[in-house]
Image (cartoon, rainbow, N blue to C red; front, side, top):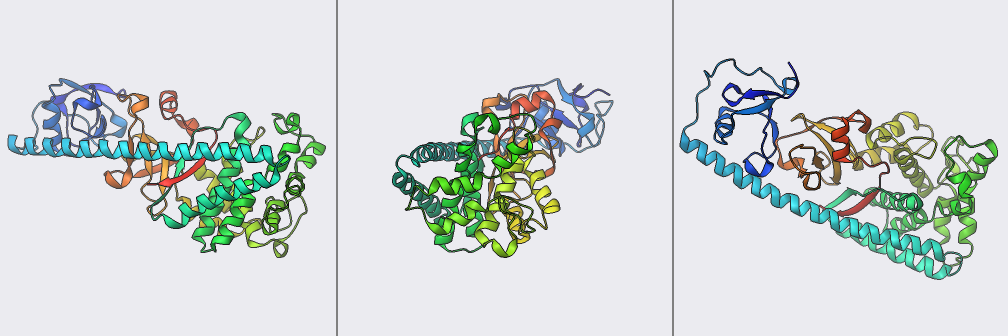
Length: 416
């Protein structure tokens, strides 16, 4: 039997997975595609005046009946009216919830865009006006720290793609915010939270000294080119020598963000006993963000895959306590993950409530809802769960284009 074959409404049974061929706003159900749970839902579908719906055998528990006779007891008209009224009320509440989620996301996007603009301004001033650059950075980090320490309802949001010339800013902000979040979760002092945030903002500034012909090269680097790029942590330190107000305690983590505990890192090949806890923490977060976003030579990994690689392949290189904390903090399905739901639908994780990791906010594919109106839902408030994570490449093209998985993953911190 073909997917999405038309079937008469009279043939529907509990357990059949269907798609309603009408606009989302013209029915009381939360989604236009779903598995029928009870006979009341069948009667409500009949009440929509539809003769046929689309049936998906792959997602159904049973086949449609071959006759109009059903052994299932039918609800009374009064029960149906009450159910429909309740469903419409629930749907209205969910629409209001979606509007709030979208407002919160837009607010976080605006904050993130302001941070990117500040970052761009700071980097441009490091050489000419270093004191101004450091003061602006301290102000930005202080504001982020205030939000981290004084909000009980923090969420990590997926941001829009970075432009090619802004990757360094997005990466630096990602690393700064994730490091600060982790430092908070680890119970570090405010001073330590701000120190690692400030260092992370400038950890890759040395790459501005690397010729763009090397930095943007899409074929494998030569050994001299690779060795030159590996000096960028020390170039970052040299850059900051111009800024005598930059805190000394933040400099080691900048110099050491590519160092590994077993001495296999660069540029100095330091081992664990020479790496302070701030250096060890930024190494974990920097590696995660690089795995997610890739390079010109290496394709980025889905966030959940990146976490898995950190856990499996870096146990001798990175601080395992910090890796475990990062996994616990982001959850099994970090922002940017493509997931399949228990309803059979596909979705993308848009944000994670750091207090309720099992219930992320997701944007759901529904072919009858315009892309710009795609529903963002909180899994906590729906009778659904995530079945599995999957690579974006596994999505059919129409779903991929709708969900628009990010080539580059950027994070913003906001409320939820």
